[in-house]
Length: 292
Image 1: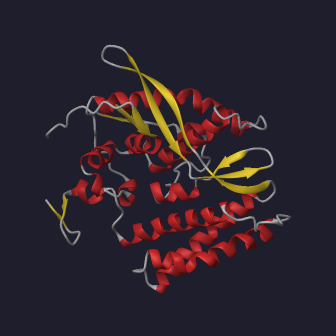
Image 2 (image 1 turned 180 degrees about the vertical axis):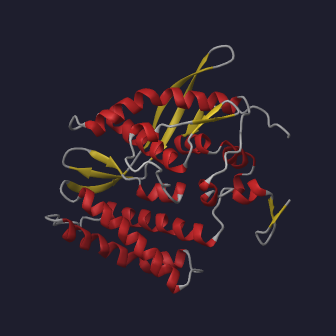
């Protein structure tokens, strides 16, 4: 196997490190072939379109003052649906290849995401605002000295509420991961989320569920700890604070592993939603077929 030269970087995006923590070979393939980082199968594109549509709706909401009454979830949801209706033609022009049946299925999923948003946020919602590019720093032991690595977080939109600003992750989670994965532990306890496996000396997430949960928790923990968005002390905010304390060690381990050219192939259910699946299996031809 031909090894690529060590890529020492001082800047990473959080999501690419989370992807490395699930499937290091994906990180390597996307580094070598950035053009391969695109969804190609029909079902992948259907889910991707959901994320694009919901992101477009959030953009419209950030520019509007039409959300007035939020006395109950159903009223709030009805107002959100108006933005779905007004953006339907635009979305179909962006992705014209889908059939009416496929668009109907996509719309059902987008409505479900809007319903979840209304149920979670209607009580204290004020407005959706554009987010900022955020970052934090992690110290990593280098060959000769410690180095400071900058980790970028890009959250396009925030939900401004009466108590704090909450990161909106449903759109970028769908675009970045397609699916959140399924937990094997119905209790979804912290122990299950933080479970690890080891391959070639690299500590990895066993499943996509753990990877996506870690990614979400890291973003939410950043806003709670660094941006002082903690309004109340409860088990969830305490979990995020503890997560933020442990998080630098995990990131430092991954950065060191990347610099040591460690890219083990960790196959699993997450392979079906991976954009570089064909490159991982072999070489994709012009029609998408894979050759050895």
